[in-house]
Image (cartoon, rainbow, N blue to C red; front, side):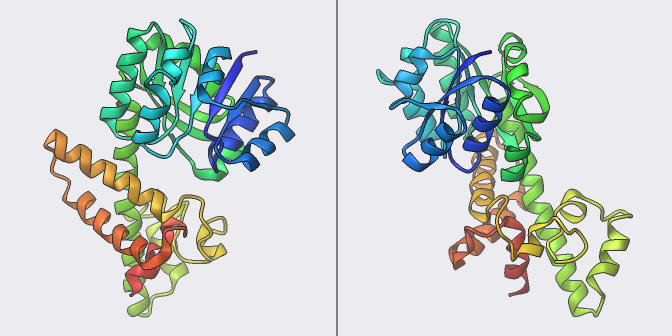
Length: 294
């Protein structure tokens, strides 16, 4: 079993770390929130004060951080993970960040003789707790093969997307599809309401015909048709609107730098921005239907 330093014990990171403990790994947690660290220690883990200390002691370091800025800060510099990890340590960043930052950090890790993967996740807090996350992984084949047995303790689907940064590329492309499709599904249900068509009837038709998509069949934005969807819990978040907006902004940054034309992605980013600015950032992203209704 591996000695794992886990940096970032938030809503996603903590249950992921707890699943590693359940699998028999030794997990040492780092977080600015003492309550999160206390939950990890209560589950059988231990705490260390800084990422620097965790890196010096670990076989594997996993990070789950808010943005590229924090990832650069934690990995780079004299007090960073890369400078203080032992040669051959496996580094896995599960944050969702910009592709440029992911590739910059990976290049520095490689220069120092370390194996590194960018491995953002999909599946929300429910998937993190259940250990059913999807990992989209960028990095070398050697690093991916070494990481598989660890990632499998936290996720159900693990896909090697290619070289460094490709995990992040896959994540932002996937979530651009998700953001756009959730708006489209929401607009369809609002139109159905105005036309006097019952929610369940539209679901029964569209979920079995050409309108079928994940936003319809697994995460339906109206109460009733999909009992497990947040619409049945007043849009209590599995994946917040603020996080969706973050990912849509990342997709548009990537589109700009790569020269890709993503008109629907750009419009979805604007719509979610207005929704978050209305004070609904902590709601589930499927709550965008409320904004669509006006």
